[in-house]
Every structure is written in structure tokens, then in C-alpha cells.
Length: 612
Image 1 (cartoon, rainbow, N blue to C red):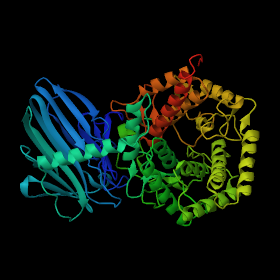
Image 2: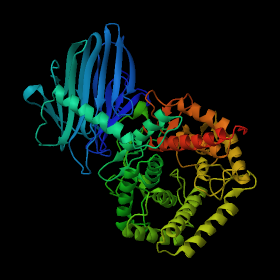
Image 3: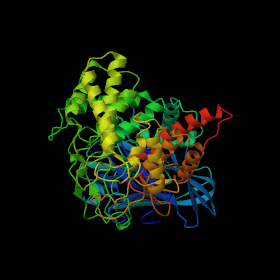
Image 4: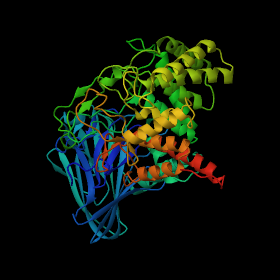
């Protein structure tokens, strides 16, 4: 067992309130419960000794391993191909129906042999509260075990022929299965003192499995995407859904915390929260695919944030929240964790919550503008109040989209997205004949446009730049054409795209910016940013550079892991870096695929046309 498997060597399972990462070795090395942002029970991904894990695997080092998802589902299958046969471990969490949060979550692991005869080993070593809390073990009837942690119980149950054996505060089991035989292991977390779950039976687990499979396949049937990359788009859609907290409709940025942007470095953040920006873009990707229910849920969540009365600093919205809307995300360091392969400090919480990032208002407005209807009267009034506030407050320095810790600047992207907020407000008021100070909003929109053109354009670089006091390029501006600020064929935009191609692009992979030229207040370096690489594909496609766009897209897909998932970044050797899986990456993949499909369809409808 590799103490720290590559970040990419994982699949993800979840029930729409929590998720777990399962390595290709059959190890659950990340699970926080009862919510995405709860303390961990298993976190060996961040500390192999103190973090805790649950491993269920064939008991031979000679077996090769393959991992895959059942088609169009979030059911993960890890296959072990050994000299004595072929075995599988299937992992799934049946999605929780309804919108009520629950403290009871069950992760099901099914071992079976499809050829020959194989021995399996089960090792369960929970470590509660990020490995800071001790626990006790209690044996129950039917051979079950419950681990008692602080406020949380973890029930471990199994069917024959699994016999659970205690080793200190941990549990192990060794069992053998022949062809056609199965064994079920369930992990159920719940509040301390709750009634023990019923022992699993094979019939019950089969029914749960079928419910889970039917849920995902039925949900995907609502997708309107029929393009060329259906498998990858479907996997991205499922991933975005898995990263959305069903009780509130709040999407999180990623399933994990602390995974490094540079192995051994300090760029290790907690992404298990709801960024207004990431959530809005995730919801727009799902809307574009035809999933409208998610749009309504996010709109409700966003309105509740607006109705809460703003932040202590006077902003209508904070840049991020906990999934239940709590604005308190105090950052602390888990000094007892060594971090992924020594990448420290490991942080829980996020100090960036107090930053000012004006772009969030544009992303939120754009997501709302994509919804199938305008929403309630109360929602419209909250929205107009936000836009009225923004008219008086858009022209300020901020920390920008990349949450730099090097001081506030007049970021061009932030200005771009305030333009989007005003533009969408004017359009919505006009389209739906809703009341609002449209004349004032229009003046603000035009003032932003003029400022960006006058101050965000570098004559020297012949490109739009990161902020008004620099000539540094920034890949976030790849969103300019999609947002409608400029035509994708505008000479100023094509010149900007060319400049980015020369400075930020490395064999189709795109850096966010050059931190040496524009210091961000942090030590170390980072990889190329997957979001930006897919935005680059989209921009190329919209600019009519279809051959280049398709080749860049196909190259990007080769960096996906074995089950189609992406982290935040790609390192110098093609390795995945950062928190995993990353919503930003998957929403951008969806947008790039749809834009590329659209442009390729248009080109194919004109047989005499050429593209470059």
C-alpha cells in the first residue's frame, strides 16, 4: 500500500451530502461526515499515520488493479487481477432523497470474485476529528463493531464470511471468496447514541445498489448534451452533482482540503466550501446541460445569503460560505498532520473568506440570467438591491479571482464581471418588464466598459492585462468572449489571445499568470491551471481556430485520471495537483466541449469552409 498514492489515483462516491475518496488500491483515504465540511473520519491522504483509512482489497501484491465507474453512475468498481483469479470491490453511497440534512450516512463496499478463488483483507482505522480525537470500540450483536468518536459513531458491519477482529482501536478481517461469492461491508456514520443500523443483507444491498444506479442514470437522462464527448461531459456533470449539498443547493469547490498545488509547498487550501463564483459557474454548466432543478436550488440559497443582511464589512455577499450559509470560516493549521507527502501547513477553514472580490457579483448575475425564469418578486427585489449597491461600489481595488495575498489591485477581471452584473440586470429588467433603475445601471455598465478599454489594455503588450498597474497577462480574461464583453473575433481580443498563447500556454496547458512578474504573496510555484486550459479551448473555438482548439481539447483529456476526474492543476510531469476533484475544472470542461461542438457543427454545415 502506497502511503501517499498520486492525487489522481482516486475515484469519488457520495450521497449528495458527503463524499469519500477511494484510491485505486481499494483504500478510503478521505471521508468527512456528516457533511462535506465536517471533520474527517478518514484522512490518511493528508497523514498516512494519523489520518485514518479503511482498506478492502485482494490480499496479494501480485494483483494488478483497474478502477472504473459503472456507466453513467457514481458507483465505483476496483478490480484486482491476480494469478489466482479476478476480484472486485464495488463502492457506492445511495443518494439521499429529499432536502433535509441527516447525520446518518452509509458507505457500502461489496467484495466479490468473478474468476478463481481470492483472499481479501479488510483494515478499518478511523481517526476522528482530523486525527485529533481518540475513540473507543464496542462490539455489537451479529459481529458488528461501533467506533465511538466525539459526537459521532461509526458502525462497521459485514456479512459472512467476514469476521471482524480487534487490534487495539482498529479492526481487521481476512476472508476468502470463490467464483460467484460476495461479501458486504458497510460503514455507517451517525450522531453518537443513535440506534444501530440493521445488519446488512445481500438482498437489501442489491436493492440499494439498484436504487443508486437508477438514480444516476435517470438524472442523466435530463441532459440535453448529445455532442462528441458525451462520456467525459456526463462524468463531469455527475461530479458537479456529487459536489452539491442537496439540502441547500450549495455547490462546493472541491471534495478535499490541503492537497498541494506544489508537493512540499505551502499552497494548500481548504476547498470544501461554497464560493459564490465557483458555485455560480457550476450551476451555469448544469443549466447549459439542461439540469434546471439545480438552478432553482442555487437561486434559493443565493437569495437567502442576500436576505441575511450583508457582511460585517458592508458587502452584500461574502466570497464564500459554509454549505449551510454560515459565513464563519476561520482558518487554522492542523500542525499534527504532516500533509500530503510533506506538504505543510495543512489548513482547515479559509482566511480568504474575508477578502473582497468584486467579480462574484457578475458570476452570480450571469447564473441567474441563465435560469429558465426570472424567479419570485422577492428574489427580484433582492437582486435589484444588490445591483443598486454595486453601482456605488464597483470602482474599488480588490483581491481578485485568484485570491492573491499580495495586496489589493484594480483587477481587470473584477471589472469585467461587474460589467456582466450590470449588463445582465439591464437585460433581465427589459426582458421581463421588471422594475429597476435601468438607466442608472446602463450608465454604470458603460462606465465599466470604457474604463476597461482605457486602462485594462496595454499598448505595449497589445493585450488586456491582469490589472491596471501592470503589463502581466491573466488567463481569467479568457472569459471575455463568453461573457459578451467583446466579440470572439474582435482584433483586440485576438491580439490578447495571441499574447496569452505566447506567454501562458505550454503545450495546450495554461498558467493563470506569472507569479514572478506579479507576486501573489506566497512562496513556491504552481502547475498549470486546468480551468484556464479549458477556457483556452473555448476561446480558441469561439475565435474560429477549430483545429487548434480540438487538438488542445483532446490533449487536455489525456490528463484526466483513469475514471475521468481532474484536480485543480497539472504539474511539470503531467501529474495532477491541488484539491480533487475540482468543480472549476469540470465545469470548464463542459463549457469547452459545448462551445467546440457548436463551432464544429457550424463548420461542418459549411463544407467549403476552412478552420485553423
